[in-house]
Image (cartoon, rainbow, N blue to C red):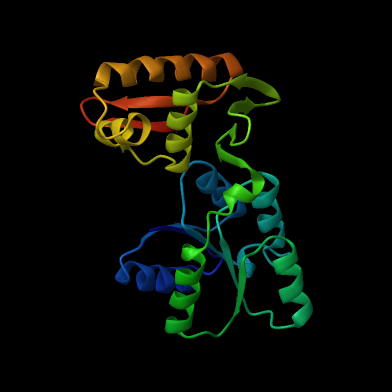
Length: 225
């Protein structure tokens, strides 16, 4: 599982990251609210670990920014603020769990595992997002800066798979299996046709996101500079 670690204390971030990596997780570490939002917008995470020391406002501003941008990955707040009022505020603002310092390694890992087992919270918003695009899971619409295009069924299934995996490459075999079915006679040329359709729709929306093709391997989303 890929985990995003947002911590204002470098030493603590490194200790927790090492702990997670020893448990076979992939960890991205950031130290500013801007990097937190940037990473969360362009990758798929099983859990975000957010230290309240990241910002002077107990990290709550960063948490509010995540939820305002409909970034719905489960968030574990870690904090040296032990007051009930602080815990209640963090949970009310959208955190999924709140862990007070100091804590044991075993409890920390258990909290992360518990969050990873929860149903993808993005479904509560009925959307998936990557960068400046949002995919409405109820209407099959792709949205960017208040512009909307409706996707066909196959386009929707492909885009849902791409957004759900962030920058991770989706292999051609997996695309065929999940979109057309494992017994489908669909050829790889069919995939490229639909990718072309989706690229044109992203361009029509004026999005800063496009679909990158890795020759002979697969596809993934990436921001356009």
